[in-house]
Image 1 (tube, rainbow, N blue to C red):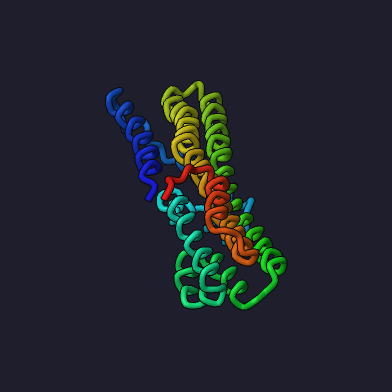
Image 2 (cartoon, rainbow, N blue to C red; image 1 turned 60 degrees about the vertical axis):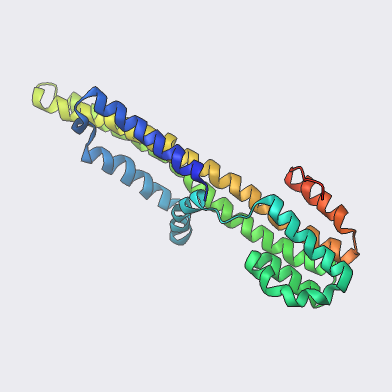
Length: 253
């Protein structure tokens, strides 16, 4: 679990709430028309930009920002190196007994190892794997894109709400009782848009992009391992290549 995501977003909202409460009249910051314009409008416009299924999956991807389900790179390097050591010592067919653990680690890794064990040429394995990688990257990029779009749309609809509120005020200058509600919509919609974008959407999109890039590195590592096994590369050399791929330092031994 990525506790930093929860702490960061939670702390940002909490600090804003505390500031509002300390300033008095927290009820003044609750405005239903402003919520409808900013939140409803932003979500509706976001939906218009994506197919329904992809948009919903994009919203659900916030859970990946909290619990990405990605292994530690160093642990993965050790895991892949052990696979290469076994293959070099006992032969590629000896990996058949571990196929379930490969799929448990990552279905992508399991598919690659299955093809390798079945005797497919490495070029054919790479071609199939790269096609799958393209599809995976596209899916993850869409999830990032949904949150990036919302980060733009919420402030935009906040500004629309501001304009609506100002127009209502200008139309009712002769009626002092109408100035307050109009001013509330004008100011609060902008506030809602800024809060949603900067405390939720932008952090989530950045975290999802980080994990998307890391996920692609894992897929490259799996393919690199299969290629190293097929070519009979020294496992220690593979280990160093994987360390360079992830940009981590490994302890000797």
